[in-house]
Image 1 (tube, rainbow, N blue to C red):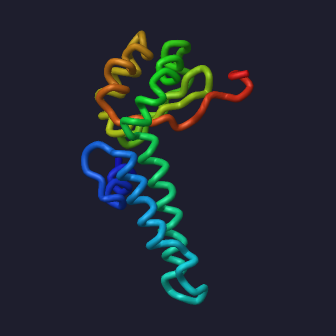
Image 2 (image 1 turned 180 degrees about the vertical axis):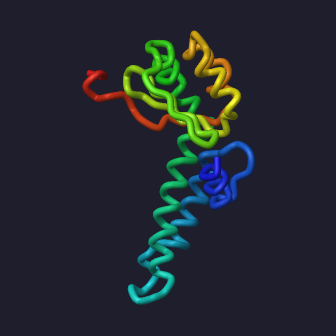
Length: 151
């Protein structure tokens, strides 16, 4: 959740993420912080390197959680959660990562420990995740399916 808030603050995003607006903000930030704008011996050069890396990471992260991205990937997402079971669950500080049989993993942000405990104790974890986690909490695909299994 901390990373999500930090990235939204960097891009000055409040509420839902609009991809067109995000792209404009991304281009402006890259122009402002591009390392080539600074001399190698300039104090700002190192800061620009770090900021440009952070901007790129933030952009890709925010695009991955945008409603438009979820809508575009709805069929693939539905197929993943309908097909197989869950092979791995990791939870740390309200970040829940769920890995499915095909190797696809989703990160869910802001999941309270009480919901995580109910999820663990559920006899039908996929159904519980569909109803109680993937809808109410911000999620993103963090790993793609294994290439060998997809072929």
